[in-house]
Length: 108
Ligand SMILES: [Zn+2]
Image (cartoon, rainbow, N blue to C red; front, top):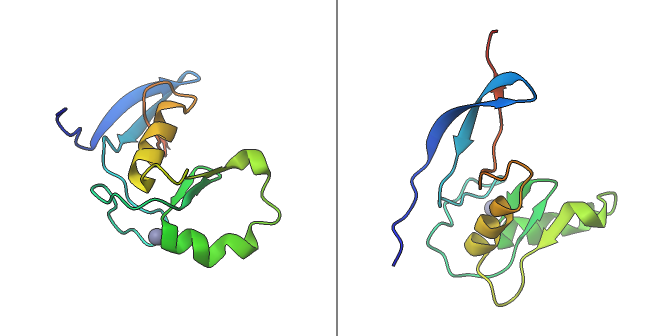
């Protein structure tokens, strides 16, 4: 069994700008309720405009997603846990680093 990747902060360059990046490693936390879902095997939920919504939060807000483009919604398949869905999504992000992040611009 592969070891778990722990969260860490990295400094990277994005479009010529230095930024701090929070690499969540294998940790999965709902972006709405902040509940840790890292070890949950429960399926459901979705990633909406880059935000991971656990099964409970996704059900609570699904009726308010009418204006969100379908391309910005990645619904968790039934045979995949929410945590694995989020980890797989991170691998597909534009950074190519397996990182889902919020960057903070540093002083030049
Ligand atoms: Zn939640």
